[in-house]
Length: 473
Ligand code: NAD
Image 1 (cartoon, rainbow, N blue to C red):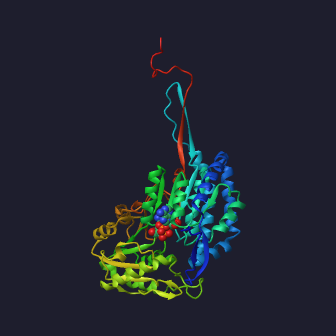
Image 2: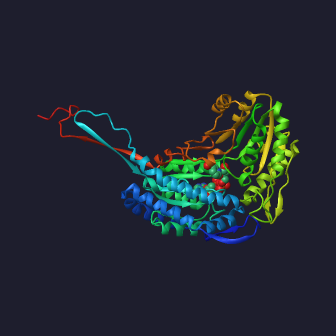
């Protein structure tokens, strides 16, 4: 049987197969890895300022193609406003890295303690080839979020975006060439087999995706003894305490749960609300969510885009059917809308319990179960009763109490009196807890340290060392 050379591209607004994605053969991925390994040597020898000048040029090259990037992202994801936020946010992040990286890399590891006749020099050494494997929910941003600090550190990049959303690849290649980065940043396309070839060709992997695939990627990296940064799924909880500003909590959660149609790793997917304010909060949430509309007719109108990946449709349909069969009630939405593509209307569910898949498993869709709890302790315990630990939110009128509660949550990024701030504020370091991931922070300046190793030169000044064996007679 001959290997397929392309994959069908599906337009999420129409459901139609409207293009083909070439599959980069494994041998070509390996050859690109070799080319990168060569090119990286000269790249790392350039000064950090020269490398950052190329990154600034990349930001300019993206900015000059802003509308073209938005169009290909629209074709792949079916949403317009988030595509603008994604392109603009990516450009801003590249500029931030270009400005920050020189100071970050100027900080060397602490000098070894001086021992009389021994001096030391400490340097950073970049990993030659960093492999990036990314998902479909923010295709451009999640392909560049690790690549840019890695380039600043002196690494080269071998990236494979999701096969669901790779239409931006030719445009990005063009922008990279214009910025002088074409030799140190190669993009390949395809599905899981291409991802495996990327792992084989790389010295470090940054993977963003599901827990199931992350496990396979982590295992493959362990077999090769190469580091893996794994940024995986979540089931992020929000806690609404009885002294919270209810209107703000409802507005923040309508946004934090339903922006990008709930297809964000840090989407709020469960709310635990204290009983005294449950009714008022639920009414406020329903009011906010009822005002949201689908963008079926015009991608630029309405807040909720289509379900991007066809594979998600049955998962969401199954979670909703299971919840309803077991007594859950949808106060808004509740049924998928099919117009060629499939939309999940923003759905607030009540009368749910923690055993339902919609409360337990990642939905990655605009579905928000609301669960009433008797007090703070129950809210914390149920929020933590999950295998995930990505992010969370706490709404509380008392700042000290909010921080105390936040510190009890098993997650790496906690928004207080807001939601999903880790997606918007990329300067604060955070790591993923439990099955939500592994590895150093991709946020903040620590991100860049993931891409360098410390090398120590320990220099004897010519003294006969007291540690040596006595001289032979
Ligand atoms: P996925 O795991 O299905 O695919 C991710 C990538 O892995 C794709 O590029 C895919 O082609 C590739 N892949 C598949 N099998 C592979 C294999 N065996 N070896 C190497 N690569 C392989 O994830 P998805 O459906 O594209 O994305 C949705 C998931 O991503 C959700 O679980 C979401 O929570 C998660 N996510 C996490 C973050 C984060 O920062 N933590 C951000 C965005 C999305």
